[in-house]
Length: 70
Image: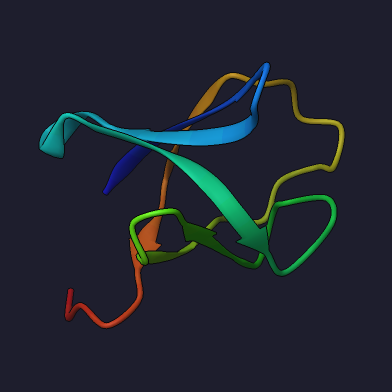
């Protein structure tokens, strides 16, 4: 699914346009964010693609929601 990752005054957030959902990122596997999972405030866990740690935000990426078959 397409997810927009951005940094705001309250930290990182994720926007899922298909669901019109914007929630905070509350935990992440790697400090650099990329190539691991992130947990959203609503409980979803998304796997993010591997990107360079200096990748500028905001950025739209293809993420995979854990627990869903693709």
